[in-house]
Length: 275
Image 1 (cartoon, rainbow, N blue to C red):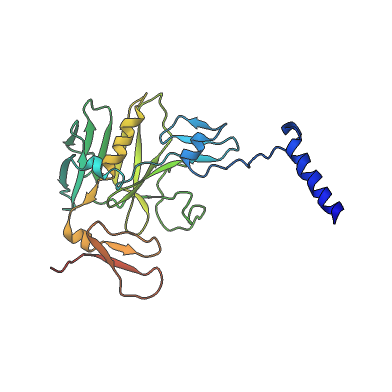
Image 2 (cartoon, helix red, strand yellow):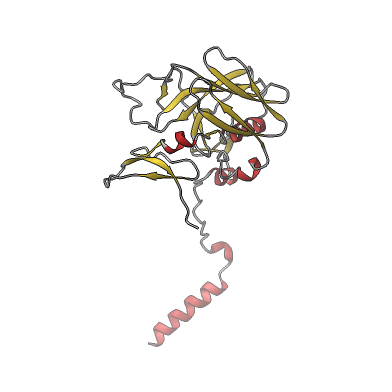
C-alpha cells in the first residue's frame, strides 16, 4: 500500500515540475468549412471573381455565394415602383417591381409583345418577350433526372448553362448563367420554372450585361426579377401545384388536393379567412 501511494505521489510531482516543453502538445482538429461564409474564414481559401462569387477551399471544395431571395429582399423592394403589364396575345397580366432609378420600357418585339426594365444609362436591361404560338423549350439542368436521357419527349433548349445561379422569387423560381465574361457585353437567357416543374424560356427573359460589368447591379437585376409574378386571379387560381416537383402556389393561395397518395398534384385556390 505504501509503495502504491509513493508511486502516485512521484507521478504527481513529476507532472507538476516537468518543463512545459517536455509535455505533449494537443492540436485541436481543424474544422471543415460547410458554408460560403466559413470558407471565407478558412486559411488557404481562394475567392474566384464571378457573380455570385465562388469560394474554393484548400481541399478544392467549392461554395457559391448565396443570392438574396425574395424573402431576404422584401424590405428592399417594399418601396420600389410597380409596373403592371398585360400581354395582348394571351391577355395575361403580370407585375414587377424596380428601383426608382430604373425605368419600365415598352415597345414592339420581333415576335409577340413584351417590355423591359432598364437601368438609367440603359447599359443593363431585363427584357420580357411573350410569343403567340411558341410554347418555348426546356433547359435540362444537371440536377434533372432527364439530364442524360435521350428520350425525354420534350424540346430541349440549346446552350443550357452548365454553371447556373438560382433566384427564388415571390412566385417563380429562375435559373440563369452565373459565369460572366467581363471582356464583352452579352445577353443571357433566364429560364423560368413553370407549374409542371420544367425550366422553360417562355416567356423569353434575357439579361443584357455590358463589359466590365458591376456585380452589384447584376444583384439588383436578380432582385427585380424575383418580384415578377402573375396578377390574374383566374390564372393564379387555376395554377397547378404540388406533384413530384412540389410546385408552390403564389402568396395568398393554398394547394388544394383531393388525392391522398404521396406527391399528389392539385390546383391553387385563394386562402379564405373568417371574420
